[in-house]
Amino acid sequence: MKVLIVGSGGREHTLAWACKQSPLVEELFVAPGNAGIGDLAQCIPLKVNDVEGLCQFAKKQAIDLTIVGPELPLMAGIVNRFQAEGLLVFGPREEAAIIEGSKAFAKELMQKYQIPTARYATFTKLADALTYIEDHPLPLVIKADGLAAGKGVVICQTREEGAVTLQEMLEEERFGNAGKQVVIEEFLDGEEFSLMSFVHGEQVVPMPLAQDHKRIFDGDEGPNTGGMGAYSPVPHIPQAVYDRAVEQIVKPAAQALVTEGRPFTGVLYAGCIWTADGPKVIEFNARFGDPETQVILPRLASDFVQVALATAKGELSSMEITWKEEAALCVVIASQGYPGSYPTGVPIQGLSEAAEQEDVLVFHAGTALDPATGETLTAGGRVLGVTALGSGMKAAQDRAYEGLKPIQFKGMQYRKDIGWRAIR
Ligand code: AMP
Ligand code: GLY
Image (cartoon, rainbow, N blue to C red; front, side, top):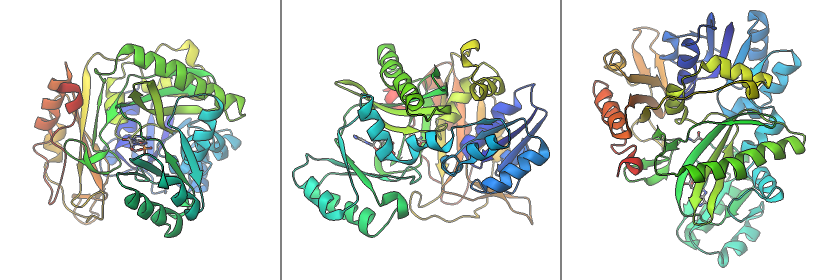
């Protein structure tokens, strides 16, 4: 088979690594890829939102399966376009991807189908939003409606902070179009977990749980990021809560999308929180999580390409998907200043030394090759993810932190406590 992966981050490096394990794959292309992906696959210099360019490439190369990593091309209708050409794609059509693309849509869907989530209201006018928060209990949870790279959610401890945030989103357009509508919702308290499932219409095959660490600093403090690390399984979430989340959240959501004439194909990601009233939805994503993928796919015992094919073709019910017992933990290494502004083009040392270690996988997130010297340089906020497998979470954690030691670049930052909730 010829397989094309769309994307350039740690998730896509992991997808490429998983495809590479499959004997089904003869040729692997990644658009646009990164320096690490270039070691496994042929990188094609096409942007993820260049739907037409990607489609023409897939046709010309007679690609047998395309796997879409990020949300942007999904919301730009890449699956619709590929399907119109008869190309097989792993990912939801635009009308289903909107479950991630619009928080207001997702909230309405959940309300209509009684899928447990925080109470909420949506606003486009600043004055109305300001009135609403006057007597809303604190903290306030304010969310930009559209895609904001994981940074569109602000938890405000005071009403003053809330007013500033609303002003920034609705008037100053800090999140561009994504923030022209906001969702203000009830603050939920509890343990969070990421529940991803392979979905085709009503067919739902849930994966093991993962948890990511969204905050930049140790102890889950500081501003939200795209994700500073992840681990799987999540031992402190009981099986009964997992089962309830599958039955009350994932299956009803897949069913609801079918009923609404928006059947979903691909990975449906439920970001959940285990509250005193049971599991509730914080957000839906229409794709693999990043960095959750970096700990989930290394635990997959089945052939990933077979699973992706079964998902894309709607043959999930005839497929048995198996997982390894081992735990996996991923530490993200970020650039200085991230999630604010950061430098790029900083040379990275020690990558091959790190990658050679047993049970250690180095996934590139934001890297590029220096065309002149062939050196690997930083090219993003999140630069690398170092994943390790171990017989338990502590073993995986020790291995990941030991494994990243050879890696050095100026200003690099990473959290020292990934997995702490599972180990304490
Ligand atoms: P999201 O981008 O929607 O996943 O939100 C980012 C983070 O904000 C989540 O991982 C939670 O930690 C937090 N968050 C979002 N919504 C709520 C809520 N209703 N209550 C408490 N925390 C929330
Ligand atoms: N890790 C959260 C996300 O992928 O959106």
